Length: 355
Image 1 (cartoon, helix red, strand yellow):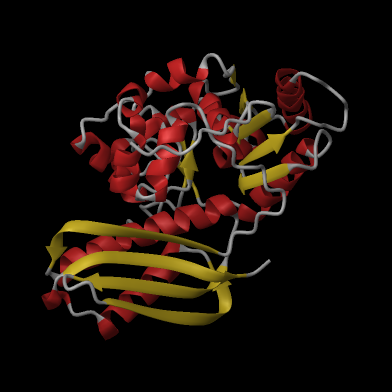
Image 2 (cartoon, rainbow, N blue to C red; image 1 turned 60 degrees about the vertical axis):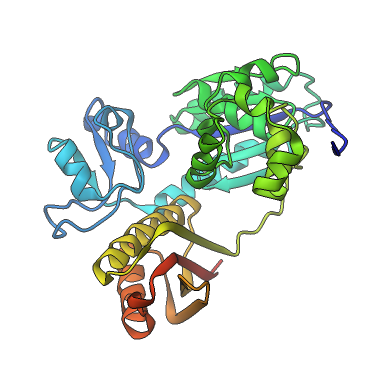
């Protein structure tokens, strides 16, 4: 069977830094009376008619099953004693820039993934330190000493493994994955823990009997490519700890969007609107995480016959609030949607970002 060559660069030293419950941690730092209490960064549903979406929450709130992109109404139902804070995103952006300034003391190869996480390539670094683990510890110390915040760190020879490592111990964790450990660690992970593998891909993999990294190792490369295309090529390599994606210091995000394909077509308007509200919530959460505002909202609808319709609306002022996005998406849907044709896919995107 045809196979592509496995090119594995193990010479790099990559760190993934993920700030711990970033927005909530800033509020706890600035308001010590919140310490030990469940804190949710979202509009208080009792004051907003149940509207609003959770940007993040602290670890106390997570004990109740609260998580980002959840509606604030559901968060309140899970934990009525939670303290809801609308959030000061200008302040969070300022602190995020302070964190990035700390990163750049060690290397200019910094790829921010959002306001609270980044990849760093420290193979060649400004201080000439040979140990990436030592640099990660120094960064954690600097963040705590100067900003009184904690961060979790993952260290490995590529971005994929560094991200997995940073997720393994939180908060204030530091995990190293060595080349000789990678396949064993990945083999024990459920495929949903593989960064970049979404719910739809997880479902398809599970249909193939693939639940863990070990299961994934057993699938021939061409079978994965046949099932997933280019993504299958990447999956085959990730199961073996191979990912040569570089740290891109000048990565520019041009849009943020979410879409979903439905196995059973949606024929009822109320079902489609319910799905659109969920997509708007996820887009708004991602906008806040990446500290982005955009002037153009795009609605995408694909029908059962695979015809696709897109409609966009541009604003004078940039927006990033769920309510603003939802209002326009509803209006566009009312203007153009034909649910009777059966809706196969819905998507919501915000683009035309301001700096």
